[in-house]
Amino acid sequence: MLLTMTDNELLRIKLIQDICDKRITGVDAARLLKLSPRQVYRLVKRFIEFGAAGLVSLKRGQPGNHRHDEKLKLQTLALLHQLYSDFGPTLAHEKLAGTVSANWFSLTAPTMTGSKVAATNAASWCLSMMPPAA
Image (cartoon, rainbow, N blue to C red; front, side, top):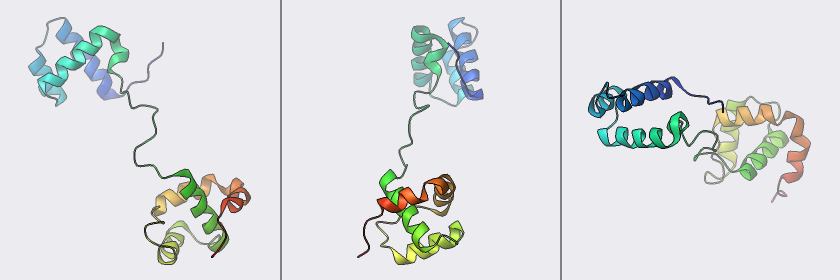
C-alpha cells in the first residue's frame, strides 16, 4: 500500500521508530515534535499496532468542517449569474452583501471566485436551481 505523508509525518515515523528501538526517550521525542509525552506514547501505540499507516492523519480526504452548504453555493452562483455576471468576485461580493440578508449570505469573495470559476459551464443549471424572486 502506498502512503502519502507530509514532512511532519515522516519526522514522526523516524522519531517513533527511535523510541521503539530505545535510541530516544518519549519525553525527548515529545519535545522535538512539540507534543505532550502522553500524545507521543499514544502515537507509539498506534505505530506498533498499525505500522506507518497508523501515523497518517485520519482527517485526510475528509471534507472540512467549515465548508459551505452546496445548496447555498448554487443559490449564490445563480444570483451572481443573474444579477452580476459581468462583475469581478470582490465587487459582486460587496453588491450581494448589500442586497441579500446577512444571515443568508455568508460566502466570502475567494469562495465565490473558486465557485464562479468552477461553475462557468453549469451556469444554466444553477439558474434552474434558483428560487423564484419575491
